[in-house]
Length: 191
Image 1 (cartoon, rainbow, N blue to C red):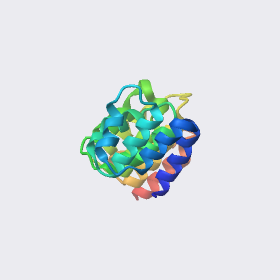
Image 2: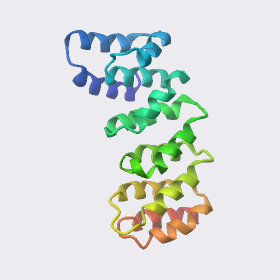
Image 3: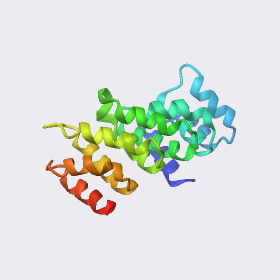
Image 4: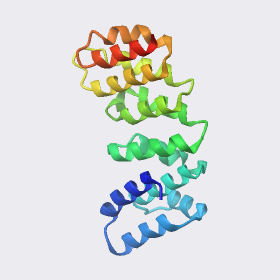
């Protein structure tokens, strides 16, 4: 079993509990039937943990029926769900993923949940990645911005992507105490 799937199964076992829900979890972990997993995504009355597990397993298998569920989970208020969804989306291979991740990362109303979409954009290295990260980092330069961790992730990501278009915003970020180290390191990586 994939290490990420093991971690997810452990977390969801605590959430699902014992009895019938625990048995349902075991069934979803064991099945090889993608249609059964896809049905979980659309059946009414299914708990969130079951949808998450089904979407994760389909995503790892490259089944694009998981895309919408994974994107919703990527923007969830629970950071563990966001991380799990990002992991599966990175392996799904759906061409819509970079655009969706960029839309979530740049949605200022949901910036508190943007860390996983930002990190996913870096991992994807898609054409949408650098412009989205520049946009998000520029917004984090506002005085007293509470989402500085998202800004740090953007600066680190821009350094990893090594695109010269990021230089101006990284130069500006060096003047912000919480972003300065990440921005300076990213600038060094740009050369």
